[in-house]
Image (tube, rainbow over all chains, first blue to last red; front, side):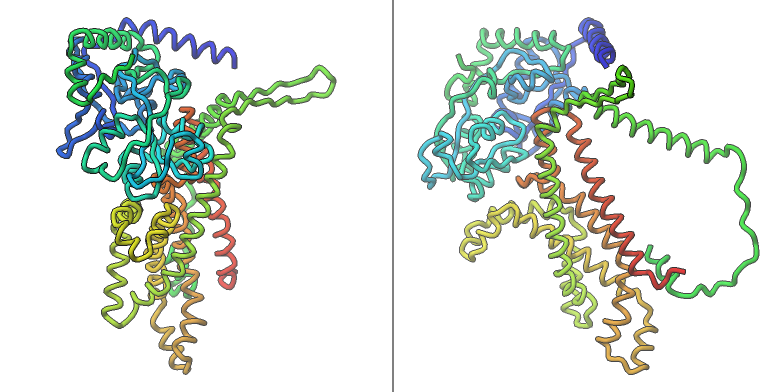
Length: 258
Length: 302
């Protein structure tokens, strides 16, 4: 058994060393979810848009590489990367220790806190586990927010939905009493006509162990050179104003965090 | 399936032939080579999955011969199963409940639908036909979505009618959708097997002066049940597998728990265990059905 493991590690190492030099990153396939407005979503006519998409295109332009977008359901987005369906994940994925066991990340390209949203007529007063006791809380499955909800709101009934669309529908119709997600995602929805039913109850303090250090660009283990290229490009577009231009198009303040 | 059972029920009228069947060919024919090759591939795939589970759970086997008597030490470190095993079993139970309740309710609902479908009153048969046509012609996923999120968007109307407290609950919506779906299929199975009975039996019974209800109850229905047994089994198997879609409306059935465990660990064995559990369900049902069939057709066995 030990030999097998050694052999596997050796094979991986050879693949890494061999791969790092052999790979040519002039063409990169970018994986995203396409159902997480305003970060990445699909318009009615099927176009992929959002903050993540524009940042991705700006980074590719900065690196002078050709990028092609691929959409993939959130639940399968890491297995899809590992299986080689695309080369990066640029889908507001938080850099967490759990995920880092599977894939590698670039430096963060934004960091915003999580928040709780409720219907406007809700009588809930706070966002602590005690305030949210005995109510139902919706979250998107496989997200840091769902992990947080299951660990911290143990006295509440946490319901998991495949995409953000579905928990929004159920919050509106009253099947769940509150939802937890990124503050930008929730506030953008609440500002739109569809989200007029609801309000932000408050933001949560993010827990580094669960929420990580912000959203980064995921790559396969062994493709760290690609992650480094993107990390440098993030610094470059922060410096040349391109990031601010995109940021201001979507948000009222700088989402990069300190 | 249907034919073979009815054939054994009726005496075979074909002339018996005296020709002996051809003796099987000797040696390695092309078909045998392909067959053996494919079976070997299946065995290798099965062993591969078994090996994968052994490696993932750090199973080690030590042969201990030092103390005179050869002991075999088996140790394992099933981290995944320790953390998620109980959850998967809970999901298994939820799946059984969803399928069990909706198949039973569907069976009750299918009786009036089948009766309407066979009715001579045109309006009844058209309504039943439309019902069956809709539920057989659209995916169950679409039906579950229509009922769950459709009810959500008519919340105010439903609340006025006092029905919202029913549709608010995901469990009720799932049972409701599955019951309507399986009732359509079960009604068709029932209608098919009843109408499959030869008309001559009705005529013979009426010649003997038996009332129609008694003919149906004592002559037609027992035979129809034999014919419909296997299709009913197939329908339940389809429901077991089809019920995996309830995980998208927040019910943590076996598939839901599996996806949740996988999303936390990215450990592929989650899906292997789920497949094994579904297989256990289907295999158990298959065995029960064999027993049932043996019991129902005991008068036909020689």
